[in-house]
Amino acid sequence: MFNLKSIITLLALGVFSASAAPAPGASPMAEAEQPALVDRQISVRVFACEHIRSQGACTTFNAPLGQCYNVPAAWNDRISTIINQDRQFRCVWFDGRSYANQVDDHLGDGDGYFNDRISSIRCG
Image (cartoon, rainbow, N blue to C red; front, side):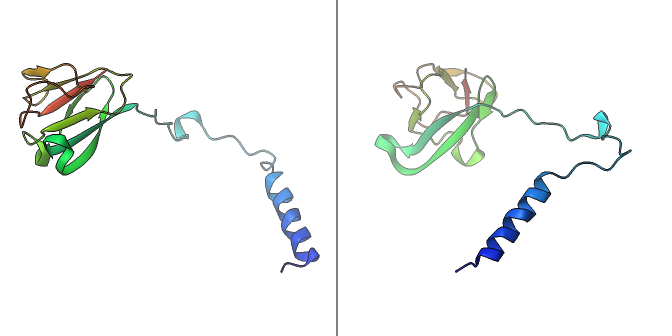
């Protein structure tokens, strides 16, 4: 067990480290030197399997919202089950890379003729 002296010492160290102030005369980092904050990109989760009824190998893609997402080469023209897991967004899929040849625009329900044809997805 911890003794009381150890606990008080740990608490005191925490207070001192939390109250540290910059040294007098120290200039703040120039704005150009500050690390840029990266916007968190919103993506839509799309579940896909190589066979119908979610059989065979399956994966989940994170398709960036409002952008064309080319499925990885290993999944190109291989998908037979596809389910939009974030149904508040509408997704469209294509049988060509980068929006070529729309196959269906109701990704949420998985209906449509798309067996082994999907190459890219756009959700928005």
